[in-house]
Image (cartoon, rainbow, N blue to C red; front, side, top):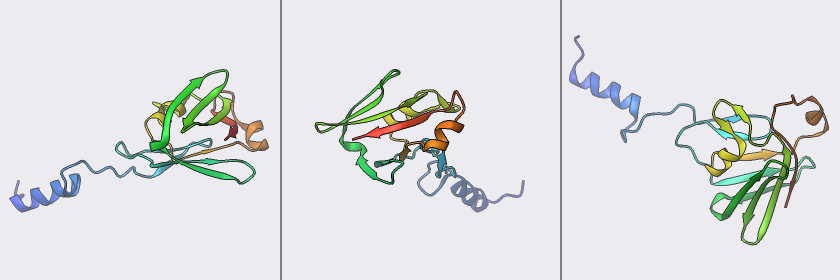
Amino acid sequence: MNDSLIDRLVSRELATGPNGHERDDETDIADLGTFGFLRGSRERATMLELRKKDGNILAVAYGYIDKAEFNPSEGITLHLAGHKIRIKGRNLNVEAMPKVKLFEAITRHRVPWLREADEPGLLTACEKEAVIESIEW
């Protein structure tokens, strides 16, 4: 117990950061196949990148999403200033990892990108895995 006051303060600042918030070293993106998930508990995406299998990509600002709907038989619909983005597939709101579901993660701005599955991806995906078959805008 020879820790000096300075040593204790420095170690506390290293653990929490200069602003007093806990450091979260998990700020990277988890690739869950169909979508990316920001792992840091305070992380939020500013835009949602929609990646089609043909190479087309559209990025939309989360701030412009007026409404998000999930219907198990129709998929996810995002409403943006008179436009609709439809995300069709299977298991779009099952746990991709513990406590992480695609629709819920979108509503919390934790998804930086979505990706349509290519043909091999559709065939090799397990029965309970979330799969995006198409993204329409």
